[in-house]
Image (tube, rainbow, N blue to C red):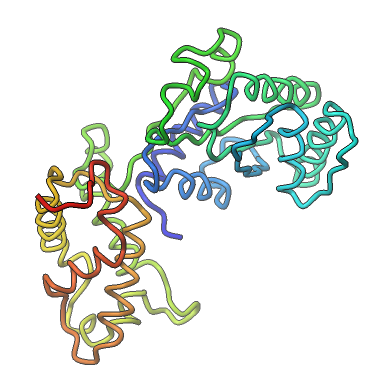
Length: 314
């Protein structure tokens, strides 16, 4: 797991939201862009946190018969708990809340964080259940929600509940938001005072210089998988312009506009392919060719997750 600028931007907005007393942050972005990846970085790191926190992640499925009992059972089952089919829904919900509270207390958390993946599946009734959870937590502490939403899931606005949720729900959960992007190819204006090179270049640098493989070896990923090329000065980041050129050429063939961001899913798969299958398996490797890059993009499924891709070249 590499630290990325999109992840750092999310951490900044989450920190600010918690500090100002908000109850939740609404996180949206296209599918496979890296939203869940970014939230998991928040769960697994603590330097960004303004208070001590315990954060639990849940994924919301698409129930055929949604209700409070289903909602509560989902929380319990995803934490490895058993659920009685005969239990009253409110009893099940209270049990789920107590379980989370106890774990937060055990970890000395000042704030409990609940991250809901696929929150775009929530209905108005689901947010009422969330409201019940929030009200119960407030009796003894504080809870903060991370709602992770996929904007191209076929639903609009704040899930299916309408473009403007009921006032009591909107005021509670939708006052702070964050638009999650892939790795950007250009530095945003707001970041130019603290960031010199693009998100993509910084991500390549993680593999070139920061991440160690194998653990304890002192070798970066690029150094391990391409030792001779690395010794001669080659880095993934040194070929970023050629990589971007090949991406734009591939996109043009399928009628897609020039690239602006790179989803984490295809980025990670591309890096794996070019380091492990191209560099590591070729003892004479010196640098990537245009053909290597194109094959890496195709094997990473780059086109398939790009908005506007129709599967037919222009």
